[in-house]
Image (tube, rainbow, N blue to C red; front, side, top):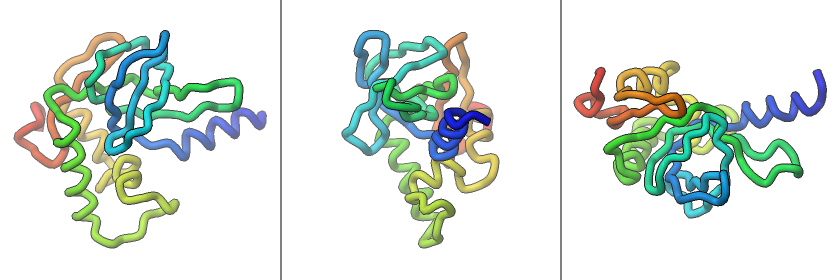
Length: 156
């Protein structure tokens, strides 16, 4: 296996899903800010979805593969959270952290990163995307609701 491919696989293993706020554009790149952070990152979105400032995106973000790139890659087709606010999702993550208690997390991940990467159960994020589905277009999938509030999910 070529060394560059091992590097890319390593980046994928260290990445997690996360909720990001759309903060505008810079050329063909989208500026995204991770939930709870003030740092923004320029991202290439291979699906072609440009979106609108203020949207919440549930995505997997890969860092630049090497020094030739100055932007991140949105690895999956973006899941766009409809009628979900940043506060609503932050409150959800806080509830999951509280439910986890003081358990240690494999890979030395912070509690919030562990939740976004693995969820509280093995199929948590698959179930969420299924139960929260509200529609799609070629470049994006639309979800609504908060994972632990069943009545907010259209297919729960």
